[in-house]
Image (tube, rainbow, N blue to C red; front, top):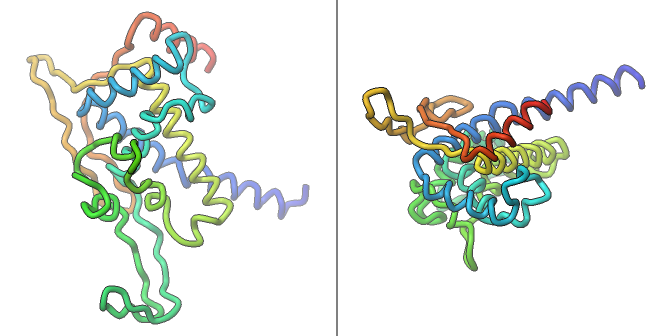
Length: 232
């Protein structure tokens, strides 16, 4: 392998990792906050996992098509707390949009968060509700917005990032729900600590810090957890 090819492979791999290292982790972080706030959603997802997968193994990518509610939950995580803005785009020619002139050369930064919380597209957009993506008339798949727009969607490296990020979030959510119960944190005085639904500002937006309780669902779940730790 020549040095130029090796250089490109290294940078492609690095770009693939960097593109999802922060954003994927933050989406999973938002998932934990959502589950602490919405135990009824977690319970419904767990019932689906128990029915399809059982309790003797962890969910895998092969189970994905058979877990529609868990898939909808992942979609809602992506919509509920968008973690990055869209990359800047440059207008190639004068454009007229809703009566406003956008001159050639203008730099446009789409407001992904607003798009994913637009009441014209999503009913009760501030509410965490995976069922919006189920049924005969599902609402718009947030992946059409949350991973960027235009040519960026079809570049090979960006397609790979999107697939990797989406798959990582799905399997993390499914495996977590299979073996853990997530609930609001109760301090030593018995006070329930309510997670605040908010995000930080900046290029990469983090869900604001929160506390929650994470416990194995059962003794069998604990055995599965320990088995995974041993494999690692």
